[in-house]
Length: 383
Image 1: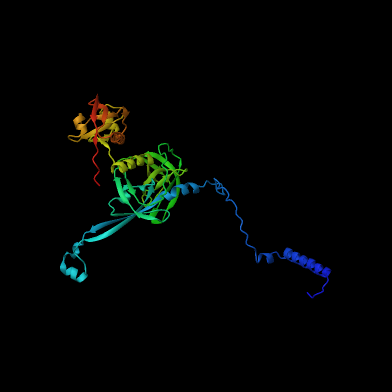
Image 2: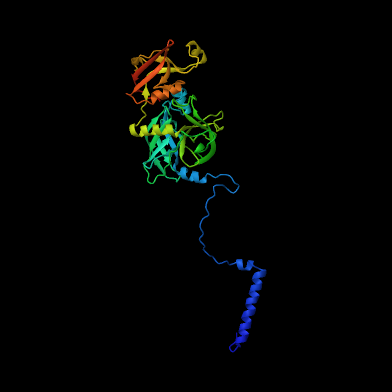
């Protein structure tokens, strides 16, 4: 603009320019968006709803609380493979390049586990780590550590490991004794080694036994998908607490068919505490072999209600033998608790501390008897 231009002309030019710019923005707003101004605005995150947008329940918060404490377990075991007899002949070895010496191989397997304390104790299945020479534990945050075997219990298929890491996430032990059929549960583990996975289902049954999986069985049955690699992982309730250790599946194909079994935390906790304290589980023992009463046996023995267990055998010099128990006796109660089957008798006897007294009631040749004796120590199961 030239010097000496009147002020009124300058003002009119500014007004016209602003008007033109306003009209341009109104008609073509995309011009303004071509060079937007960056403005940082902090907003509070909205509260997470209890339900998703479609109205379904979400268990994301539950998983966030429990999943960090669920670990992947990798094991390695060195095995000696017998040499093929084909290579016993030196001439064949010369032509085919074989060896007549046994070969060592490393077998690997995988499973899951749960960190139960900040001291580094990890609860898992015995069959996950059985016979392993090396055990590696990997956390959800990608940290890993070599694990030490604290102890194992093949009869309940439980084992306790220990790892040395700082700031370990831990899971809260829940209440499995009040689980009801229909309760929602979630399974967390490492199926097929694909990485940590969460599945959802309900409690299908409680107190499952006589499955031939373990000596001591009291399984939670669930339809939450459990597959190879899930063993030792967590079965949790909707509040994120541990209610079971995933252990086995019933399957004709090797994959999940909606019938999975978990050891209730009420059983697992007792086993774990004994392993940590003693290095093994100490159980009571009488030295008897028991058999369920079939309807035919009950009728023959004059027991129409069929309650009790038949003593099929008594080990010589065992506590039962010293107490006067005989083959053919029927035990109907242990410490005033009715005995319904061989499994319940085994649990009642095993629950006694070695050296404690036990009271047995039953029938011998149709006549009632009562025996008081001392409980022995159950021998360790041979693996």
